[in-house]
Length: 326
Image (tube, rainbow, N blue to C red; front, top):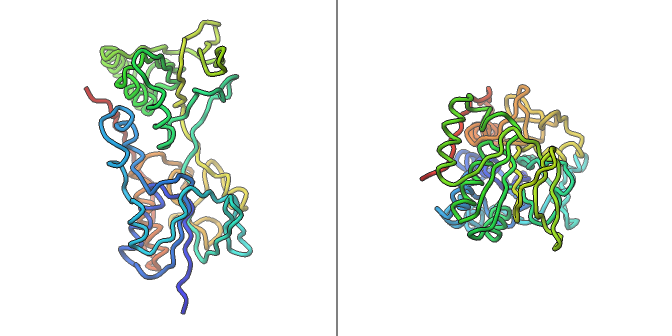
């Protein structure tokens, strides 16, 4: 009898952790195919900030290299994006027109960075901070004495600012809220953090609204403009203002989505053949952008994909850690 086919869309930490959990309990149950939009194996996205700061390397943050997939008989399509789900025929369609049939489908499409919809947000030199490619582009742009502006004074923005400063750039952080990391810190704690970061050479523009990004004569970003008309010069602008669950594929496939892909306590969507895990999902009204909940979801999804059917996901309590050393 042929093995049932499991297709995983998304080659990040949530999808691969689900596969690791599944292989531990039912290693021979499925014929597994994985599609990942990035041309890599699975890497530790949390460690991109130390890579940016020069404290570790890209090779060191790989969790599942290409050999891991081969050793487990997994067919990996790295750098190939799934653009459609045909639920009637139980197939997914890739951006090159190829198709893959499934008996069970796991969506682990993650999240997309939010770019402020201001004039100039698409200029060369304006980057999000989400992937290896983003990190490498920031490293390539960094040089001592060059000027960078990071928009967003949350966890990711401060880590980006620290990394660019570590590479010698003059870095300013622009934050709309009245203090840094307002979701995690009160005003007094944020003031202590800001003073510590200022002592390391970072500058801050707190409570200020970005109105536009202005191009220079070469067509690249040259300055950030505030709503009062003043400017900050910049050869590099990094947007770190948040993420949103990537539901585009699921919505187009007719799955029920709200802020994220809606799942029950078994990580199953409204289609019983399709599961979802990670930053793309919404469970009991909540979405999660941290690793611990993703791993808890992965264990539950693997339990059900492995036909044990006993685990339940009840939601997660989360905490964060700012990775800024010195």
